[in-house]
Every structure is written in C-alpha cells, then in structure tokens.
View 1 (cartoon, rainbow, N blue to C red):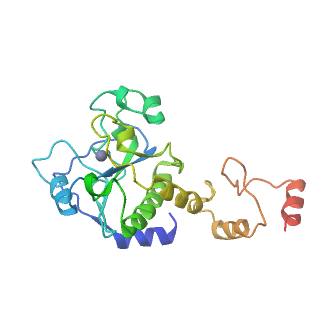
View 2: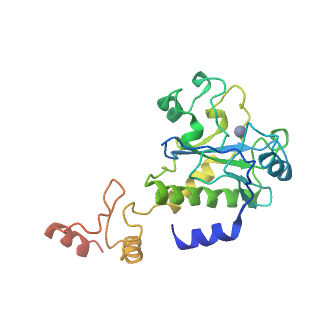
View 3: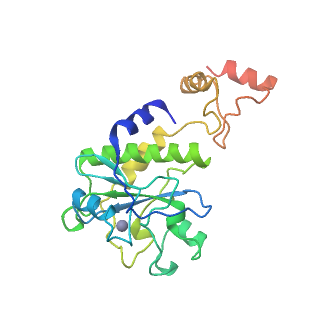
Length: 242
Ligand SMILES: [Zn+2]
C-alpha cells in the first residue's frame, strides 16, 4: 500500500459497521471487481439500514456521501450482500459474472461501493467532492486487494462495473446512466501504474523514480522482476535509453 493512500484511508474512511451488519465469507473467492451503486436514500438512512438488526437482506463494503465522506460497513476480506443473483444469471451482462456462472455468487468476488443519491434526481451523477472521494477509494480498494490477495483488479470497464450489469432487471437504474465510469477509470489508469512485484522491495521508490524518468523499463506483463539477473543487452538498453 502506498503511504499516501494509507494516510488518506486512515483519515477519510470511517468504519461504521456493527454486529447487525450482514457479511459472510468469500468462500475462497478473491475480490475481482468493484461494483458501484446508487443508494436511493440519504447517507443517514443507508447507515441506519446497514447497521439495523431488522435488515437481513443487504449491506455494502463502502458508501460515499454527497460531501465526499466515506463510510465502511464490511471488511474487504469478507463478502457484503450487495450483488446477489436474485433473478438468475440470465439477468447479468457483465462478462466476468457470465464467466463465473450461476453457482458462484458475485458477492463472493466483488467489493461494493454505494453512492448517496436518488436516481430520479441525479441519474447517477456524483457531486465533485463525491467523485473525488470515489476515485481515491477505488484506488485504495485496488491496492488493498493487491496487498491482501495478491490479485490486481485491472482498472477497466470489465472490472469496474455497475449493479445493473449484475442485475439488469431489478437494478436497471443502479448506479444510473450518468455515473462517471470513464472519469474513475481514467484516473485509475494514470494512478495505478505500478510494477506488480515491487511492493516492499528495498529499491521500490528508486525503481519507480527511475521508471518515471525513463531510465528503465518494466516487462509487458506489468512486472519489473527487480532481482532477475540483468543481461548485457539490458544494461546497454538501460544506459542508452536516456
Ligand atoms: Zn445497487
């Protein structure tokens, strides 16, 4: 986890889940996608509902309010109850959900983010503060999942999806057609470009700096292989590139 992102999370994410909050095991699945939602309620009603003992049907990992405040209800290590296949897999359009099939609940391999808003008012559009927080939260989730599960959620439209792609019948307006997927994905693509195998390496900061300045390249699979012996050709390429 990069230090700035961890500092952002420590400062900005408030954990409000309690013993009533619905959660369950991931059944051995890894979080492979982030599913975005619109809350159809105020943030206080969301917090009340996801911590209420009368709720035995739903929850979410996170919620981002209209002011950009972020709340967490369920640990990323656990499943939240936000993306069940209530209507069967024939209602899904997500290629990942279709590939996983009906016997694997999307709750087991997703991280859910609610956004405070009413579809009738916003069509899924976020406030500026809400969008800013949601972008950074997506980045945090990607880094967290990489650190804990050694799996990188690619910041593409296949992996950053809306609830309507899991359930196009009952949840057709979640998160809404104006939800800013492109802005979030563009942000992630320019901010998550790190080598997959550098986390915690003694030379991580130096290598990232050398890469940013164009002195060294990584491999096309997104790794750097920092401890691989260097060939003569690679040394020539390294020192002649700049
Ligand atoms: Zn939803």
